[in-house]
Length: 281
Picture 1 (cartoon, rainbow, N blue to C red):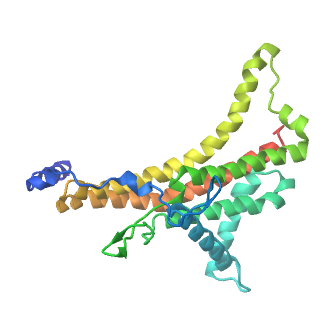
Picture 2 (tube, one colour; picture 1 turned 90 degrees about the horizontal axis):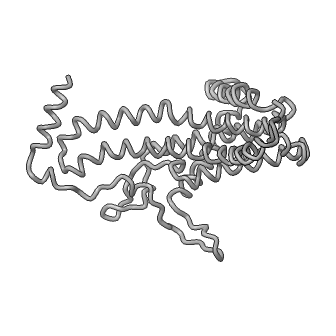
């Protein structure tokens, strides 16, 4: 099988000389943000970009999905799916990360994170005419995930970061909460441990945002790169190799990655908030 694949690849590369001419396709340009509607308030840039459009669409779809799954007087298939989602958010996320006294307050937040990030990730793999480019006046279709932008994932992580420390101070008081950051150790070691502990709090923010961003960005780049080889090498025959590989990556991302990343982000948010409310645990 390997010999067959190698032979096909060599045959494709041995086609007419123009197959070796590098095209203009560059998968990294798919993630550039251009202002569609320019909105500047002083030094604040509130312009509508591709990422903003996807976030708006994701927000509307998340609300509609929640209403569709949860509304209704009689139990049916869609409500069964809704109950399954609710159970995952309640049992696997909220109850595992939050203390019982805080579940009622913070369950809506972590459940919303789960559903919103899942929807945003999912529509990132649905071809839509929101690329910002046109072909003969017709908008071109493509895939793009708002969560492949570090500014989007960082904003989501900042919410969790702020809520974590606000709740820590609210439940424990500022002295007791910040004192909980300092472990018991000889005083000379505290000079080293305290800065590392403070840095560790900010590393949560970075890891939470970068994990989601990196996974979604890598998945899209792999798909676009394999499909783009046909344009870069200007050889349609390469589709025999590139399309199946790109399809495999596409299915892996849609079936596994988007759900796992939404779950991890929501679960870690619950754990961080819960650990701030009860730092002794």
